[in-house]
Image (cartoon, rainbow, N blue to C red):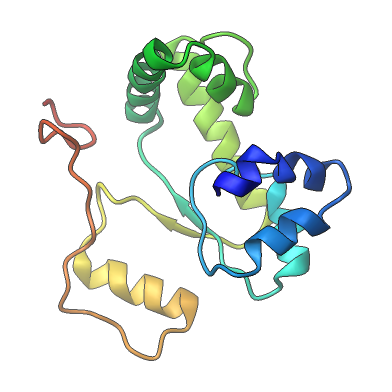
Length: 165
């Protein structure tokens, strides 16, 4: 990921020169987070990796908006342009209101759904008995860890989506 970002290989790919981006991805099996969350990269990745699978993690747009606004504000204390870069990547200039941010997520998710088949997972609501069969079927896994809990990351302070800290 660092090489892709440092050398802006994703930008080159979107401008019609995908090979350096594809070469950087080739040794790996999985990617997450920016820049891979840009829906415009999905066709580039899918064209070069026809067996690629795309997972769309979803959550309440309002909860996401509140969290993202807090996160970008905190990150901007250490790196001033962080919030501007984050919101620009979501297609917004400046800092959105909570309602605008929620709308940006809804628009982003709709763009992803329109571009490819995706497995949608909402980690705040998934139950083990449905989570693992969905994931295993989607990736054509020969074994499925049905006895394992749904992976969760509980943020510092113990808050989860929709729950106060």
